[in-house]
Image (cartoon, rainbow, N blue to C red; front, top):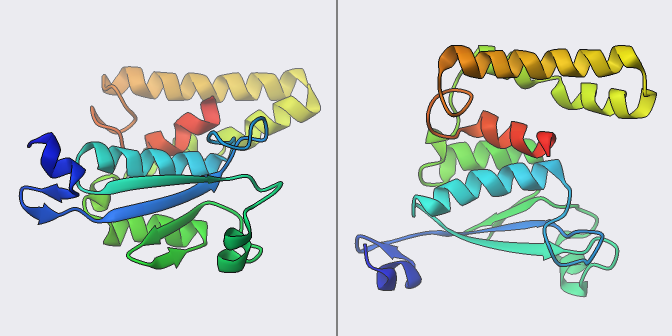
Length: 179
């Protein structure tokens, strides 16, 4: 595919839909991507699809300490992430995930069904928060044991990512929590 086609928003002569993701900006400078886990997760999901050229991704950061007037006018008290697809604003996390899976071209490929992996990663972030808040050796050990289970899972499967050799929704959920 030529760069000209991608710049014009086409793929093989087909129009590539533009998806806008509004995310929280960093509290440090108010411009770069912030530390919102959901914003980072959906950014990774959509960036993968943009890399595959199934969508054109536009990312807008919003400084929530001083949001622009048009943001408040359009979204009132809603906090990012906000996904905009063909003029439709999706404001809730579970609805964003469902929309990516069902309506965004290629999105269904990201959402692999794997109960073992879902169970494996589900409580990691809460264990990390407990370890940081409690500063307790038992909490630290619980987190380390959980991380070892994830590592053992990857070693046993022999794959680059949690469910195979390509990234999926579980990887996009886990990676922001590990940073």
